[in-house]
Amino acid sequence: MKPNPTHEEYEKARKRSKQKKRLYFHFVLFLISSVFFVILNKVINFHPEMDWYVWAIFAWLFILIIHVVNVFVMNRFFDKEWERRQTEILLKKHQLKLDKLEKKLEQDGVFDQEDSNATEKLNS
Image (cartoon, rainbow, N blue to C red):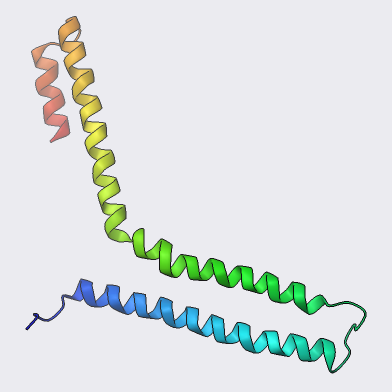
């Protein structure tokens, strides 16, 4: 049997379920509004000379597709854990560059041992 989830896992699951709930609501609202646009254009003859509702539905569909991609692709792969890993990678790269620069300065004789000790204290 799996142990109880931690607070962090619970919050992540709760946030994910809210995202999906908003997406499903958006989809239902899109369907209802699309039917309303068609009825408004065809039955009530609101501007019957042009099919403006098609453009409105396609524009809304585009926004809905962006919402789907955001929920099921972007948030799934680029979550807080991904952000933390990327930050750690960037910090490691920065530290490597600093170490290389420090070595080069020591080899050139510009950076002596006392400066190195002071730099280590600052980095701590």
